[in-house]
Image 1: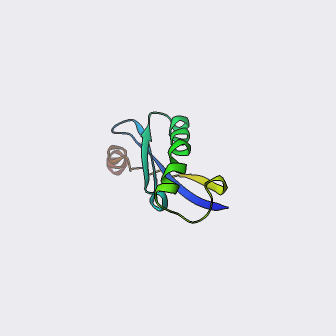
Image 2: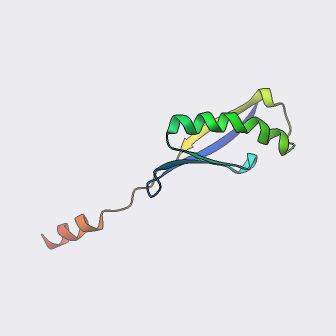
Length: 83
């Protein structure tokens, strides 16, 4: 089994899901999470072969890991400090 970790983030500025996997040289985006994972599965086998990676495409496994960053609400912190 050849495992690849695909990092997924949601970009709020452009309202798109973005997937990246350095080992496969994969970067893609879609408007929904489901469409993103489907697209990654669609292009990953070709990238596996194009990059001459060891192993067999049929044994390839993708693990999707979603990164989530929360930015502090500066307004709320300011209101709390004033109270």
